[in-house]
Length: 107
Ligand SMILES: [Zn+2]
Image 1 (cartoon, rainbow, N blue to C red):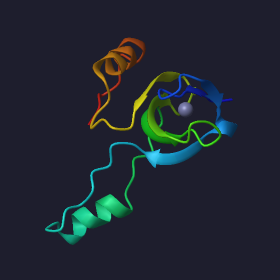
Image 2 (cartoon, rainbow, N blue to C red):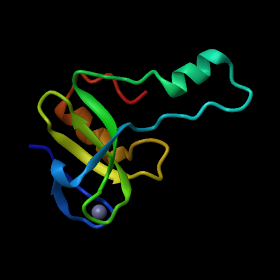
Image 3 (tube, protein in one colour):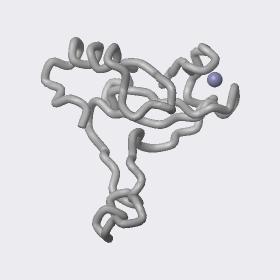
């Protein structure tokens, strides 16, 4: 079972209390973007086997969105953090690099 700690209310909750929101850190296509950029924004998402950054909502708790870094194979959670960030905090990136030396990094 996947257990994530909501960074807003600091409660460890299992996946039945959460609602998944897909890939985190997706940049919205601007008004001057071309069709390829708009297609990327609307439809194309990463689906890695390994480290993934995701959006989650604490649906049965505070109701707020947050981000989580976890491994899709082992369900190991590297950390959760505010959804109001443009990229993962450095301490989470360091934790991932320490446990997954072959990880290619956040891009
Ligand atoms: Zn919460």
